[in-house]
Image 1 (cartoon, rainbow, N blue to C red):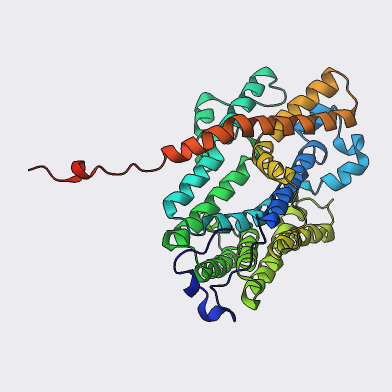
Image 2: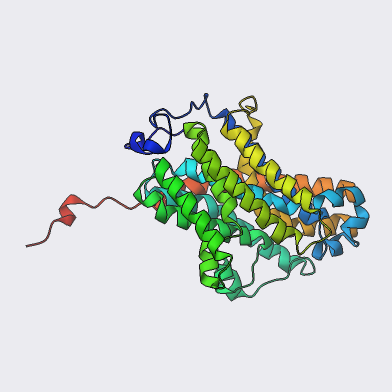
Length: 384
């Protein structure tokens, strides 16, 4: 658990009934956060099953039939798998608040760039290679579009996405920028996180009645409640329970279930709205259990690996998975269930390779390279 930064003791002040200088005990080597790593992999696997067995489109061509007919029981559950993205956003709010505590703005952005880009660039090249090998699964993009995709800003540029899942990265990047400029810039404290959460919640509600597209892109009313819920849950994890933080969690959950039901059930009436609400509730409850320390028992070392695999697995699983399904099932005639198992395991192995040979060696190097060099004292003196 990060140590309290200078000035933290004065952060909450009268907002809470106990002293702010006594954050909740971390209970050793972050065993609660090991459980959080496990939840991240669960969310990624939810999305994976949705892309393989819970939807139609390109994956139906890879299976040579509708997943609903090939996996009639699994498919009924997998249609809700895309809610793993909202689960990710709750976890992200928690993790970003935790990792930014005591850091400067430069430290924050360097850590985010070093975390996101190396695996992302490798995934771009892998999926572009797959598009050249089997265009029926992944449609190749033009060179100019591929180059724009390297920036991770292809969506606001209106370019074709190489990675189907990268729209969530654009959501995450906007959250990072908002949180960095409004909280991290002045130093993360209890009060500033609470103020940010409250103002963002109000802005998101007001945005729902606005037709200003730029404002909606900045405020992200459909996703803000999930991030806000994660932020408030981290405050509970760090400082202990209080009515204000739980009030923010409750408000964000109420808004989140509304946004999820409206956005993810309304256009898809084959889903059950009560199941949608239940999934959102379970996502909040799972992160709340971590925040309260109820998952200290989940201290298995393999959870560290599970957390490390989540991001590269999420990046490569969709298009490359469809590629593997088509080769194994349609090309080699492997039955559906073995094909599904081999594909998921294959994507996990590929994620481990990316983590081991790309993220671990190059992430820290990129982070160090982005650090400003100290100015030479003699060179800084004006010449006569």
